[in-house]
Length: 390
Image 1 (cartoon, rainbow, N blue to C red):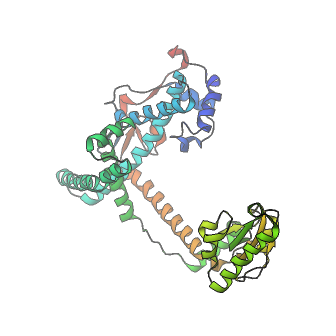
Image 2: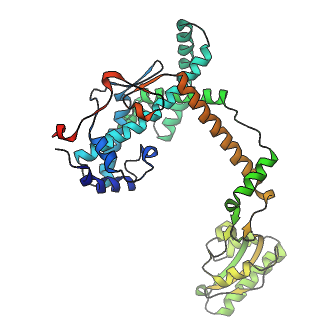
Image 3: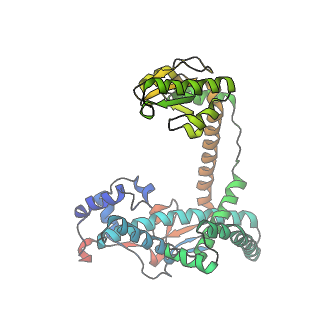
């Protein structure tokens, strides 16, 4: 007998918060599942046959076996991470929830691929369309074996396809699945690249408008970057001996002209191996407040006198500083331009995807998850009252 949703809420919340059942997080905002969502998942009847059709996108089928191995592998990983077996209710919730998320992604990917093929075929008849589809899939498969497979072998430190197949099956996938997903992704990306302007123009007034409306994004704390020579008191018998060593370092840097070279050889602070170079560092992040106060008030590009704190003696040369406050538009205009460019691309892609849904028919066992989709007949997932499942 399946437990009541309320008895599952806390355990499922823990799994979600722990990052264990995140595949469909977009649908639920990565929040703890409501009792309604839990009940809906527990009452959903999924097909069991891997060959069961769970969606059709245009002319492309999606089978249960295309997605379920990934889900089962994910559940195994969850059990390992939790250090306990999942209950039947947790497994059921995870399977339904993750299947819905993965199916949405698969449908969108295939929709873009179908739309690309439709555009390539134009108004040609079905036979010509089939020829175009065969040609494009052949090219994509060649790219997969020429580029993607060598990358997979290298990243997994393998040398044979048989080894790769075995490794992929351990992860709940296969070479055929990887190939199919690569082809769908490639055709979809080709469609987006062809239909969406990838470098939209951004006018000066748009940059100014964004800057004015999002000034909080460009606030910065005081920062500095500097070079440093250090001697530690705990490495010398007396303070005087430490001071003599730092004076020797300082003279060598001053007359030799290379403070970083001296720091690499003789300095005694954590950044010595990097030439004593401290890149942009926020005010308030240094342990030594004495050293920090000097760094944020010394003149730029001049070697300081000795600075003493409880750990040792230091010489610094401040290379640059940024004052706290709003960065000027001249300093951030390239960043703003890129933000606007990416926003325009996203908006164009969203518009294209919405138009695509009117051109590529979709049938799925979860029609409520895809705008404009139709239920997939008898194989559609069904929900039954809890009382009938007992």
